[in-house]
Length: 103
Ligand code: TYC
Image 1 (spheres, helix red, strand yellow):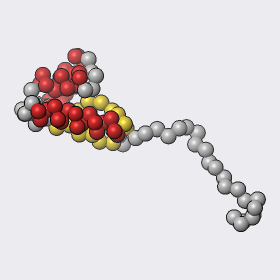
Image 2 (image 1 turned 90 degrees about the horizontal axis):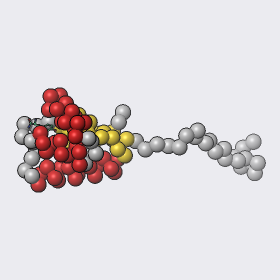
Image 3 (image 1 turned 180 degrees about the vertical axis):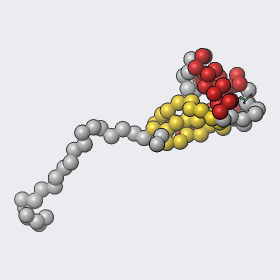
Image 4 (image 1 turned 45 degrees about the vertical axis):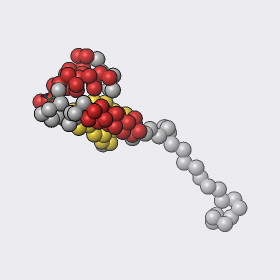
């Protein structure tokens, strides 16, 4: 059978599972100037963390240099980065927030 043969049919290979979107980690980076309370508020308000989890994550970032605030699809992650960066700048804080794809 050749491709020009009317009997030739395209074979459709079905995937066993629906494709899942790539996920992105939103990282908080430490700095010397952003107040601890502001970072805790950010984790509660933008990343929906409990007060206790927010405190733990903030302290981990303070000690280790960076940490994961949350994991989202690309558009949601980029929106969180933009919103938190804008809020920090409006308060005059240098807080850095970035999104990176999960390996
Ligand atoms: N290091 C800051 C301080 O001592 C607190 C801080 C924590 C800043 C986490 C940024 O992502 C950050 N005030």
